[in-house]
Length: 181
Image (cartoon, rainbow, N blue to C red; front, side, top):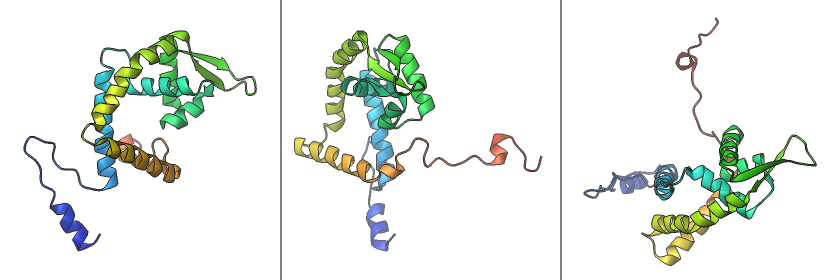
C-alpha cells in the first residue's frame, strides 16, 4: 500500500455517538454492511419464528419453485448441510414441500406450500421496508447504483463465493489432538 493510501486511510475520524470508523477497504466495509443487513432483517422478522436465512429461502422458492437443496444452498451462499437444516425447519413449519426428483432420486425438489406462499406474501412488504431502511442514507439513484455495483462485484468474484471460504484452519493444539500420537 502506498504512503498516500495509508495517509488517506488514517484521516478517518470517528463521529460522536457513531460506531467507530471502518477502514475503507472492501472486506471491512462488507462485514459492517452485512451486520447492518442482518440486524435490520432480524428486527423485521422479530415477531416471526423465522431467521433471515429462512426468509432468503422463501424468496428463492417463491420465484424459483422446484430448485433442489444444492441449488438453494448456492443461491443463498451457505453450506449444503446448513441448508438441509433450514429446509427441515421450513418443512416442519409447513412452509415448504420436499419432493423426490424424478430424474435423480437422491435429489429433493423444493416448493413453497400454500402456507409458505401466504407467509412470503405477508412478509414481503415488511421486508421491502427493511430493505428501504438499510438504503435510506442514500439518494434513490445511489441506491440503484449500489445494488448494481454490488451485483457486479459478486458476479465478477463468483469463484470466491463459497461457504466457509477464507476461514482459518484450526491447528492441532486448538482441536485437542497431538501430533504423532
